[in-house]
Image 1 (spheres, rainbow, N blue to C red):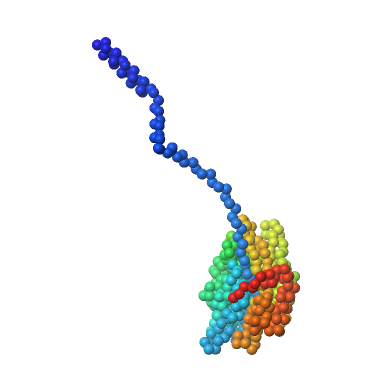
Image 2: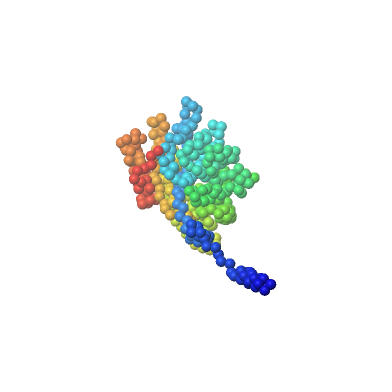
Length: 416
């Protein structure tokens, strides 16, 4: 009995010691990997985005005189073709991220094709402008109303069909409210375009269609001297709310055949910059006028800058007044760096509008530097034409400055 009690006591002691002893972790087997502890990685420092650089190319007034209509006509097919006119400018337009011009004619249809004083061009002009490389056309100018209100609206229909954006005229109040400023993607930079004209050559717009044309003068049928500042300020305020990086105003103003801006142009330019315009792109004088950067106190009390080109003259035309055959493509380098977007480079390419009356096709817009380089090889470049090309370059240098001449700086002009 005593022996049994001793054995029982020993068993109890063993049981108690087993319960009290701490558990020991199992040793991992020799061939097992140690457990991997997951650690959240430290996020890298955010990289600063690279600046966005884009090229906006701007041309002057697209005119359409009677001889241009005749030149484009093919009697064998009863069709019109302007493509040969643009063959030397197309390579430059193809280099641009976005290209704009002023369409100073209507597209009335029905064979109603005439030049000055009431312009109406075949639809082919729009399609050939698109093929040449243009993206947007301004349609507000003094010839907008030449063929009546129906032609104002039909012009927009044709541009839509051709795939060209347009600004300055509208088919309804709703369209103006929604699309008065056209926001375009210019190589990754958002630019809001507006367009206005000083008047309509004495024509007026019916009161119930006041939405049709953007007119910046209150007295647009008479003295042309009182800007509608309330309209301009309201339009620019709305454009500022669209979130674009820059605002560009294409404007028809100035005095014909004058190669310097008027005080009225300068005053209006300052007003536009003060209300939000970053770029002002002028036309109407039919000759080139200078460009510059101006400053103005903005709507918010802060000093701001704006680039102004007072006139790029005619782009294509058949005018023969002094310097109306000299023009240029303006190239604006736009840079977006963080929250700031500005013009970081300005250059231009001189062009000359040539009419060769004895040739099968008579109208060519010549790249002045390329054509001079082709003297002796290109049959268009006769001795007389060479002299005109040299004058065109010299005149562009006089108005714009020689240092910005991209055509002269190009190692080799682009080939079309």
